[in-house]
Length: 151
Image (tube, rainbow, N blue to C red; front, side, top):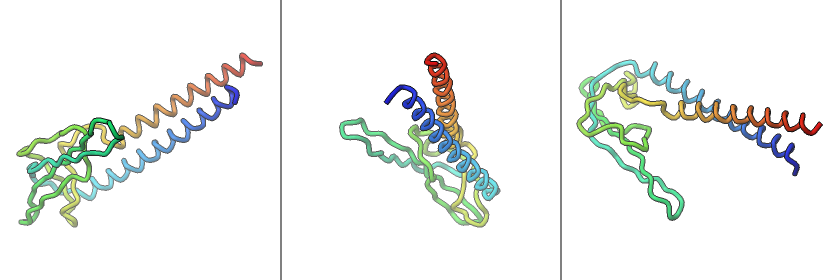
């Protein structure tokens, strides 16, 4: 295969993958916004446990871990103990930490934590998307420059 065909394929692949990551980021952001609208009541909660889960990797690689905080909070006299639906490669909470739990008044086990900081998965996907689209654009410019040099 000559260089021009390879550059066209690389550009197309980066563009397609970038768009896929971008769409996934937007879908997750919309879902998070909807959840925040549904979870419009607040209560105080406490981190009562941190669950450490080992992620499987390739043979011979060092093990990687994901940390899942477990929160305890009370809603209308009902004691709730719920594990976060997301994990983190770094433990962001500590046992005994007080948090603000925003919960869904119709489904008490649907919640989010006000103190949660960071980009989250949607932000990371958006950065990857922009990076791939920029790299695809740079590859396209390189393709055009090479094509001009050949003509």
